[in-house]
Amino acid sequence: MTLTTSSANCPEITTNVADLPCETCDSGRTLSARGFCCRDFRSTLGCFATGVTVVTALDPDGEPIGLTISSFNSVSLDPPLILWSLSLGSPMLESFRSASHYSVNVLAADQQNLSDRFASRSNEHFADLPQRSGLGGAPLIEGCCAWFECSNEAHYPGGDHLIFVGHVERFAQGEAASPLIFHSSRYRQLAPPRD
Ligand SMILES: Cc1cc2nc3c(=O)[nH]c(=O)nc-3n(C[C@H](O)[C@H](O)[C@H](O)COP(=O)(O)O)c2cc1C
Image (cartoon, rainbow, N blue to C red; front, side):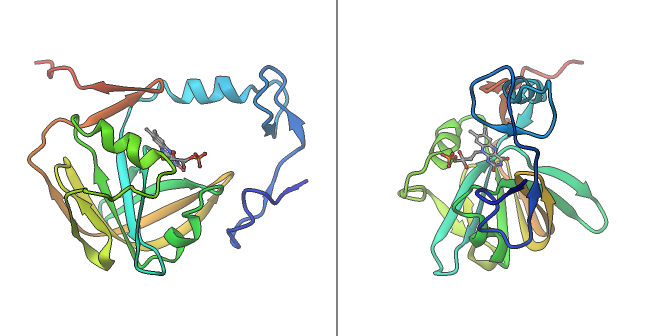
């Protein structure tokens, strides 16, 4: 079966999935393999601790957009490449796909409120937010641990997500040393380093 609902706003992607309901939970999701519980899969993925970022850009009308992203990772040192993935169901998908640049803002330990804010469907994401304009106008949020300003280099199909590969044109570290951590669906803080 061709899944058209979540990929309808992304012309690059046609996702084929078998029409199987999850056998062990009532999430209503369809899955590509039997005996595979999506809730278990999600919670097991959560065993992998990540940092938390807010990826920002300008939409085609020049309005700032952004959302909380933990799928950020490094790809290559030379050329300098990073990646992150965005749900095909995101209303921001087309705007991010067509943006010339985006900024990856690496949240600091005291910015959990920003993670919550940018994970919500609010229209007020940028209200009263100390920020400056980065490459392509993509907002750089003050107080972060680090920033990566990227040109929108490539996109790859990734199931129900679109994988973005960005070419890092500029990067910087902030004064905030300690990052926000996400693990098992909860925010955490780093313990002091071991000697
Ligand atoms: C810590 C955290 C990390 C997230 N990481 C991602 C991500 O990597 N990719 C993604 O598409 N959505 C991610 N999200 C979800 C989005 O930020 C946002 O909440 C979601 O797109 C809105 O979902 P809704 O439209 O179903 O309300 C993350 C949310 C949180 C709280």
